[in-house]
Image 1 (cartoon, rainbow, N blue to C red):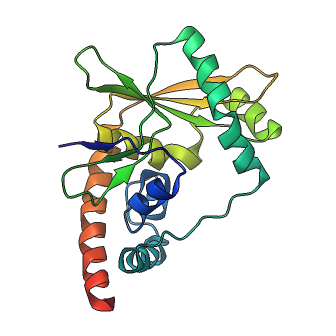
Image 2 (spheres, rainbow, N blue to C red):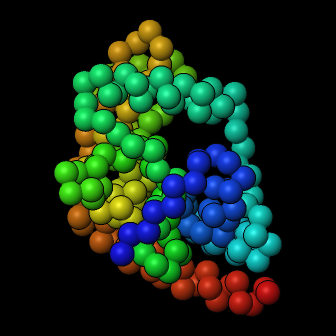
Length: 204
């Protein structure tokens, strides 16, 4: 059963919750777009094992564009809400009570019964990248595993991928669930977390 912790994203508390736990934003390090184990899985597993034992999350590199994206996220959400159903903030979503797999969607879209109907994932890339997204008119391959991983964890029926750059029209693309890939992803994630537990026990 889905577990939600509404801690503020990008805070020390949020970082601590993510330490040592596979997160949807890194599922591409575990599984390829074809649903098979990635060559980078072992390295990511070792990173998570180290985080699990120390309790310290290995900080990812953030360049100026990434920091600008975080700052512009609120702007993008306001724009999205002009023509779409309201969205809500969320901190961390765990697949179940084990809390061994998680995701942190930028926003969730709640159904009338209070469940998660959809998700909103926002990117604020450099101008040339945004223009490329507008012209391609499809989900960028780089985010395929992340988007479907979020739908696996939350049970959401769809995810709206949004790319935002001030002065240009936004790119909003609705991604429906790919059940074949999600099933393969769930299988590989189950194996990954079991192997991760073994590694953690060996290095304690």
